[in-house]
Image (cartoon, rainbow over all chains, first blue to last red; front, top):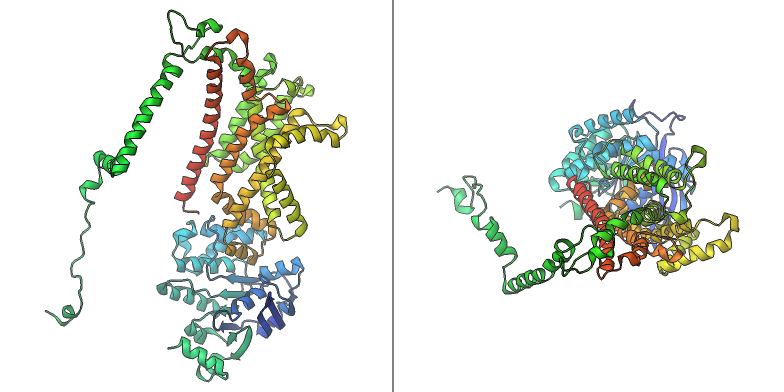
Length: 256
Length: 382
């Protein structure tokens, strides 16, 4: 889409994220074991699996909220190393939505959305506010712009968090269990927002147990367990003819 | 009866909203519930009233009713046929009050001190009132303009016709206010840096911050002041050795910053990890993350403790007398020894005046902190 321009850089590579031979240990605990994954531009990927399986950790490696001991991750052509310049470049380009929303409670909804455009992109305040109002309108809460996050419902807060990430015009969006902390009646409004976003063609990696969402939106579904990628499959195959025994037992547990 | 109502209770009409029962309102019910709710409560209430009745009237009589308000020397405050039991000798305070405020600051130059007090008050009100406009300019004024202005005013600038007044002539409330203000203005940013250093992942920074904090906290302020005043000149050439007052200022500021660092660290610990992650995920650099996201929340949470440290600092300024700086309490000490005013009540009155001054200042700070806290809670920002 037009407003998600590539920030004046050279045309984006066709591979949005490339993860090769990734290993990570927490002390003795081998949390990610030999992860290899190529995400094409515009692809929507849903990662599921039992808790403690390394899904969130993998997602958080992609914008280097976690570091790792072995392997490489290349995001939009930039290899993530210890170099802070590379890290900041990737983080500008990758939006993230958290399970616990993590809105800044001391700032209004609007200020939450304009903070990074102003301070990271050095955008004039007026432009940043116009941009923020545009995205707040798209997640359908423009009228809450001057409230503080604590005054909003969980679903509204998560939609603000999505708008906040979009305000940086990211090419890739990461969703870390975006609906797990929500009351049941608010899950749908957040999922609807994400479905609309997917229709825009942005590259998405979503850690979620919302299997309906995965069926509807995902290009590929991944099952992770014990730090490994067990199965990668198109949704139809994943849900109707899973290849791996572990996938079958997992699906049986969550689709009752 | 329909089939449904056989199976389950269904409300057909909406339940009415009712006012609360009468016994929950009114002054007598308040008294009964809060003061006389149980035998223990009744006994305690009674004892407190007794204590109050025993302690307060004599104090009022001594400090207000029997007090001597005017006079030119001790005779006014001594027992006489007209006044068999004279109370507090406020006449003494009235005669000495300009010394309490200015110390030995030359009479002809005291307008400069007055102007300094006005400038300081303006800065404090500008910053402290949440509703005043352009508080960013206020901060610039307070942290940049005011120090320069104060230095020119108090110390003097011969170039523009203000003769230099050496700090040995400064004294009283002037010195107390200068030491306290500089201590506060420097200890907060220094304390923040120390707290960030202590939380740093860089081992050298961490070690330096922890070393400084633990060392200063492990040493009494008097020792820090002595070290600042005795040891500092050993390390710098004599002509660069800072002024006595400056040494005391450095000592107080460093001492307070170590405590401030621990207070701020507590605030930092109260900010959830998710806030750091969200800020970093947006691409904010370390200093922007701290300045825009983490510290505003940390300082808000810890505001009562910051003010508590300020109050402690304010009272600690009384210790600068050990290095020969004449603060407010020291001027009271000196004045009460005046033979012209030796009466049985002079000392008590002098100290009561000092206590009143410190109490008003500290209570003011405490009330201010409470009102800001209440404001922030109301705004729902926390």
